[in-house]
Image 1 (cartoon, rainbow, N blue to C red):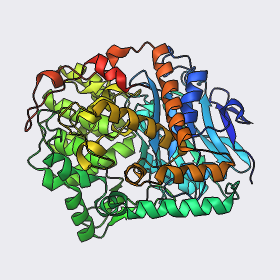
Image 2 (cartoon, rainbow, N blue to C red):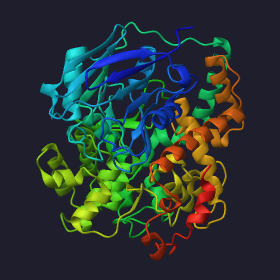
Image 3 (spheres, rainbow, N blue to C red):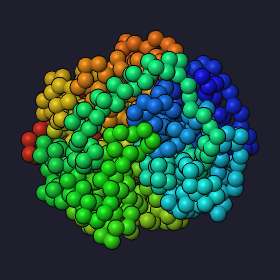
Image 4 (cartoon, rainbow, N blue to C red):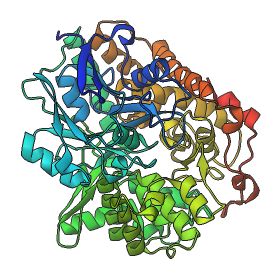
Length: 579
């Protein structure tokens, strides 16, 4: 076997670094490691942009192996948007290359003095070097990745911020290059791009030439388990057919028909033009124009739910054109032109901002009369104002829904812990509402995707309009998701896991064979529980209480058409979802 992977600590103030053994973080990875390190090493009451905050990027316990869909990178820190602990998860090539460089996690520490220039950090098998990034400062992420490819070769990958991150705007994302070198994969939620910007790091570049794959404690046992793992992902109708066929936007028509598609800043659960922005329409346009309807977002992906969306002339526009993005701009902001939404997606990636937070900030701007409802061109112009660091309206748009609502005088603010709600209205999908309210990271659908049981009838069925079973479902999913994130697996494997009897045992067999330990289904649950307890402990120290685990009041007072349901959980009931 190869050496034990190391932790790389980088002091961004004096541009020094050191490698160290995992020590007390041995046996950890992904979200498990990022959250434990932040709990241990970041005072919970510090300002997220201060020198005391840290930015951690960690591979998972199965990353760097031949396990299908195990190339997701976890990025952690204290969130500038929410003030809570944060783990944001992304695809791209970064995780796989970090593993080949024998690095378990890299940690950005301290921060430069005011006025210090931006730098790039380059990692190879020979070590670490710092490069001046002055000529890349202000660049969008697409131009920045082109510059990286020109300097370091097309095989190099990047972890990059755009103008929003440089300006430390609280909706700033971190963009990761995909297998084709495009910065189209995002650690989007929570504003961690602002943390990277505060440390004056424009890009982290990985060149894994000469790196080595991890070994296995029992290679034959791993091959047997990983073969079965791939079989179950290919066999499930969601991971084997629905997602590869239409991408995540396959959900547009499904959620709209269910009456849970938030429209016009969460005023109704159905959108009249949903068919025009659906996954089926997107696939039709891609096929007609010569794009690609399915791609993997990271090496080893067999679900292939990403795509290459092109314009009418066949020119590349964007990839990773996700359901959440299509909904935020197309449903919540009422933009009906799918090409306009694709350009907005591209703009968000290029500027380096979260598409959910930013799409909903556009809806807030429309609600406040800044631009007309449904005007895609006006929205695009509004977003690109972020590229000018002196443009105050651009700063508002890059600072999230809560800030925009305050600036524009809007009192309808769909946030939890200041993070914008995603693409499922909690009045018609109450299980996901429990997750929004109680997850450690502000409103986040990925933390416990109860849409599986509420809408898709994967892993059972819980009536989406009633209260029964919702708390228990969300809690179980939050635990399982934390484990999946710690392993470095794509969240979408959950569809097959929930419906396949031997799935958890199969995952456990892969972990055991990789690391030479006995990892059981009980350990699977204990791992997720431990992660959540760490995150809750941090938030408690940061001053968050049970009162913060609730949705905005208008969800309880305004019935949602077409079902005319309201949000009806008390804070006390919701606490039962916490571990």
